[in-house]
Length: 200
Image (tube, rainbow, N blue to C red):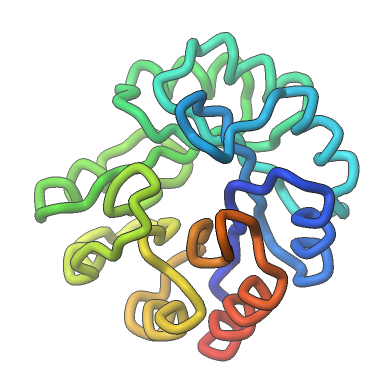
């Protein structure tokens, strides 16, 4: 069964929706330039509302390694997701310092990008079209990645089922595709989850 990650949650109502829809993962964004960025304190408050069994992922873009490590060690997040130019040494050090899982994101534009994802020392890789661009990349390249991965980039209820059926990713990751006017929309979240689970 493909797992579901709702990313960029910022409000208690977002967490309530994720709980009701039995999300496997939710994402808190700590990248300062993102409109979805929240503080560590806000993330802590929201994490307390998250039901057991759903893991909180912290999204970072070239953050100081100590910042990511602290949030992992304090239990504010369970997994770190790296969306910048972090190299293998950064990934290994973060894993070593915290003993927590790391997801490394890759922008997939060609077969070489897929090979780089394949070689990552991270626990999981995330295949995307870019940093939150909300567009789909050429899924043929995803087929070159033989390890389990999170699929992101331009997903919404209307294409998530097709993605799951074609690629069988470990998980699908959605943010803008479940929003209306920049805010998470329960109906869109529910439709997305139903589309994914219909295809398994």
